[in-house]
Length: 210
Ligand code: AP5
Image (cartoon, rainbow, N blue to C red; front, side):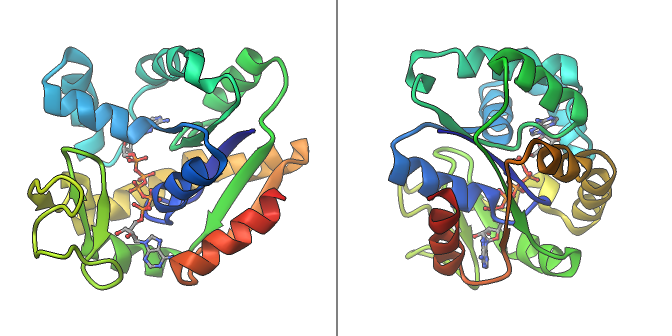
């Protein structure tokens, strides 16, 4: 099953994509996580991506598309995958369709209004070592400031600062939201109300995936 997650920054795409991946036994592929791993490792790609990410802008397609295409060509993707954060532009969606010679099975749109997003992002804490995410109010770590999974320090992502969140939201509305109509036309769009508690959101996603 080939699934893509759509939704504003902080809508809960990553939270739900990890659950989908576990439940359906397919890899979870997050372009944001790939960029953050490259930043942490100090690669050239990471250095280039960081400037765009910290400014709340999209990393240019020429750095993103090839990277994603190489990843989905790997053997663990033979039975499908859940893409989290890709595609983010119409051009990226067209490149994916071209590579698939068709289209994805499901575009899952996690719908959350902007006001809720801003509140969520301020409370998010991330582990840059293993990629786990927490929320100070909704899923706090067992020990304050430490990752439950690997024990590393939790941080407020540079791009989760309020001014950058507002920029990311405007970039989302301008460049990524048009994908909702794109996938609606393909007949693969499903929309879930992402303002409800995480477990309820996931139950609805499972029902929609059938
Ligand atoms: P990326 O890492 O993909 O960030 P994003 O899309 O902005 O998404 P987030 O990870 O911020 O949020 P999410 O929707 O996954 O929410 P989460 O589950 O964490 O990309 C970062 C940057 O990389 C981009 O800005 C861009 O620069 C670049 N980039 C990446 N891909 C690119 C591409 N294809 N092209 C170009 N550039 C690209 O949840 C958020 C918080 O809310 C968490 O704390 C969580 O615990 C909490 N939460 C989740 N669900 C609920 C719920 N139901 N109720 C209450 N709290 C909840």
